[in-house]
Length: 260
Image (tube, rainbow, N blue to C red; front, side):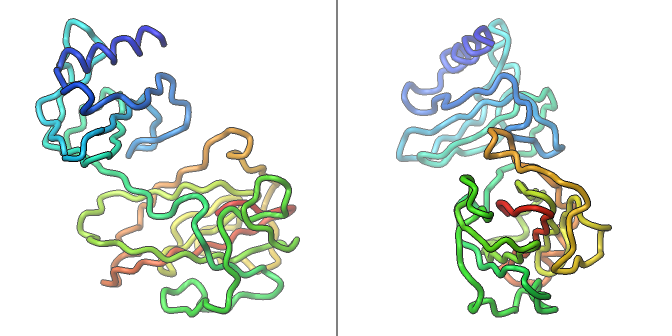
């Protein structure tokens, strides 16, 4: 692993990226599950950082793991914004159609939520549902056992809602849901089911008092990674023509709740 780090540092010198302009910010030489690519694989990766106050065009610069071939892989037309980060996968896939990933919901963001003490309203998953009367708290949710941002009553289920804005839906090519959960969840985007785990069959709407199929412990508080679900039907979810797309999920647990 030390040798790979040295080669990557040599790379920046050989291709003559201006000193103190674009730098290597982080290297993962053994990516077990920290970040996945668009295929769901977890190759090694390098994170670059533009330290300048103006954008830098990386076209023609290269990455390599071979000191005798400094331009083994060259960048396509891609601009790194000021003080911006860029993760490049060392996957050997030679991808030239540049994918720019953005997170629309961050850990600790505010959510509207309602404990499952009774059945949720039939239209709670829809974008126009009014949730102002629901509680508000930061993800993740749980029974206050040391790894929760928002404490909830010891109920079996919890409905949570979060809205976000998509500036230009035509630029979306792929979408993923990353979630850490205990014990199960079903997630909806604009009322369309996008993912579920450990809870019934796809398309089934779980009752507020329905338990998870089996017990499952959350992973992130133990140093693990969240689970990633490729959204194969995201285009249907965004087909309403609205710029404000709303995310809904219901988490159902047998023993406790955690982040959504």
